[in-house]
Image 1 (cartoon, rainbow, N blue to C red):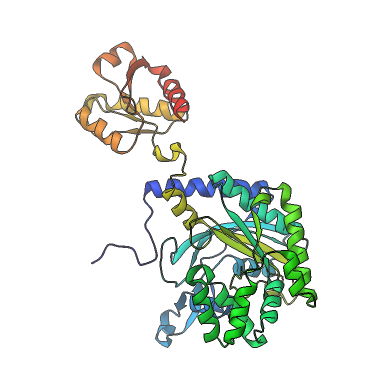
Image 2: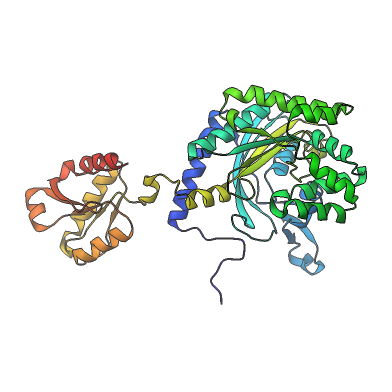
Length: 439
């Protein structure tokens, strides 16, 4: 029997958990400083809640849960694992509309599941770190969202990244200008969203396979290379909705100039984002030399209305925790204390008869705020040191016969090899100072 986890999922060992908790801690801290409040939803939803919200590609990737018990033989599904955090949010807003504030700002950090083909940085089970603001069409929402996301990346050590922005109405205007027939435009967006994955030739071929004439497909891809607002206005001068979209994007860039996102914002007419619920601004984070993105989002003013019966304007962004972790690990971006391990000092056992004194010493370290462990057996000191070193414990406390007689404890720094004897009541402060100097 294989002991590997299912394809597209992973086991998280202690070092993995420490890195994940570090990143999640930074994300949560920034989101809360921007006024976003926490929310959690169930891992699975009623299947009708999810179906029809993500477009044809999304529907194919939903993990369905078959009926259970006496209905198991039907082969039908009535539940599904959460595909993203946005549709569950829309359901929550509809369900609790009278209990939520007029302008609801929430963050949510939970796993989602997609029946996708696993690849580097792409999994079937993965965490998303979402922020969303609902209740207003004000462009200030986009500014707040983009600034918070950019600040998260800056705090994590990312210096070079682009915040690509586009607008759904600009996309539709460009498709119309290229001659893409109206019935094929939604399908065309799905193909264009794969530009980073399959390249220009791949997108051109997929556009044609989806019913877009070859000439329109070529013109469409040529238009997406036009980034200058003046050139776009010239080509779309008779399309009021597209011109409004360009104005919105320019406003976002201007208002965001003084925020964490300011210098990173890039207007990109080729940015599509294939989810069908987007209605306005769309956004994505691109990092040099990294295929795909670290996250994306946009405005979805009609999604909540699918549940509520009336429109509630909304805008949000989702950071992909897994891809961030992969990049940070490959580029050695985690701070040194993350690699130090989960223990500051390990107390050795000198003999079976002195176990109680080792336990008392460990408790003294813990009472002082340090993370302390006790070696469980009266083993040779060499073996105890080797164990502590393998766990990357920086200090080992030794309570030998001579140390106990003098009321002292010997502290060995496994990083430098230095050993110092100090009074028992000063040991915790000594270790704390030494760790602070090396942080």
